Length: 294
Image 1 (cartoon, one colour):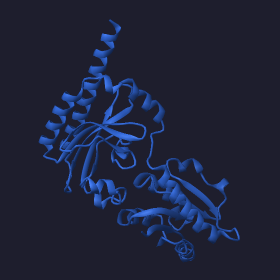
Image 2 (image 1 turned 90 degrees about the horizontal axis):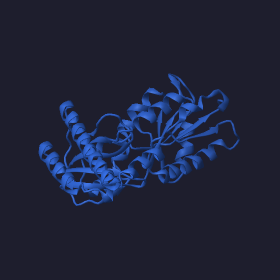
Image 3 (image 1 turned 180 degrees about the horizontal axis):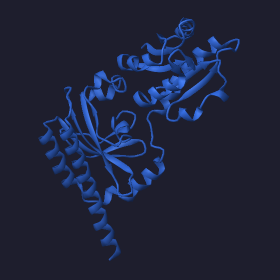
Image 4 (image 1 turned 135 degrees about the vertical axis):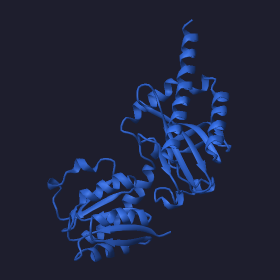
């Protein structure tokens, strides 16, 4: 399968940069000559890596990194430039895998292809994004000791209600563990868990508001996810289950096999359902702790 690499460079250099990428088997370069064009290209094409010059006609490589952080944070970036690292604000590279290669090195073009290939593989191994406070989040999740809480019937009734209200194929309540999302109840599907690499909730949990994907096949983050295709997931909306200490431990989500959007009112209601699920968990935990203390 051909992997598209976006090459962002000045008009006099972009062809050379693209040629270096094209020499690697399985890579195909897409050329643009401005920072502004990056956003549109990420929307239109499935991109596995971005190679960018630092000094561009309409901005800098930092703007390219900012676009990646917002639109496609799992996509790695290679800064291919003759600007010294000392002149670059590397703090802006957080959450995006960024490699640096000085294009003035004698074998820079040969190295570029190798680095791009390697950083793509490394990005695939990373698999999914994690919150900066992931350890604290997992500690919060562990405090609920889900296996000891009598929540099954309550959550099954809740997901049945959610699926019926939104008229969707699937509604579920899932807890996001270290390596997988575990489904506590799933109306319309017989699912136990998904790896975090495969679940959209890995992205949704990083957003404060409800995340909506109107059409999975039109979203470059997910349109090559074979597991989502196997499950027939075409549209998605997910709301955070947030513990009293502010840590997001799970999601309440609705899925369908056709593209669809969700109004502001529908998103607000989905968030209320997520808060209800969290309240049920908190109540059950409080009751259990009271029984243990007696």
